[in-house]
Length: 219
Ligand code: BG6
Ligand code: MG
Image (tube, rainbow, N blue to C red; front, top):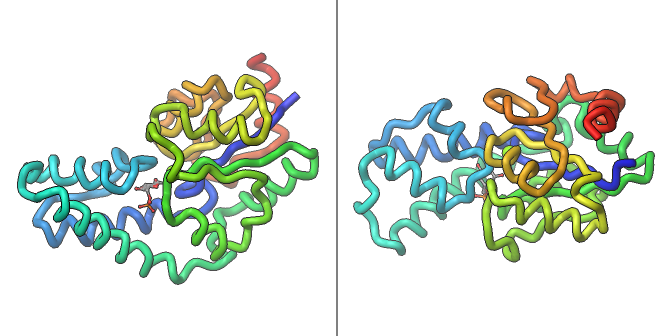
């Protein structure tokens, strides 16, 4: 049987992946660095400072800033992001996601959150879904970022679930790698996730019955 289902947040439960993109776009424009949706794919699931490092490298500006200037630039991006997420309401939960989580919970399967965002609690609060998670990863305690499996393993452990009997849901390539590295079954939502065990293009295509069947079939 299934022991836990662990979700990523940005881009899976709500479309904040787009707000991260807009905030980085604004900063990149100011720095004169080219930035588009394609490049942004590399940043999904990647931490704030690591994302900035990739953006600066893309603009050949890797050595242009001191560590403290880099901190300031990362904070600047976060200000733009916080501004954007101020408008989040429960209406911004991606179609079907709340129902999916409620269905899983109705079978007494624990549900966890594995987001590397320091804004995760703010986003959950704005969406009014904090109560749907039995455990949320504490980013401050995670040492290795995705694609390392640490975050998904930590959540499984907190939920007392065997990763091999658990399912992870991600929209990022590094996220799918993190799930699979932990031994969990990976469900990918979106594009470029061919590596996932089960892949759908949009949240509306996620059906709990189908996920369960696919998972049990793989065993
Ligand atoms: C991830 C996003 O969930 O969180 C990344 O996919 C983001 O785009 C990362 O960089 C860190 O988020 P934050 O809110 O701590 O800057
Ligand atoms: Mg994501």
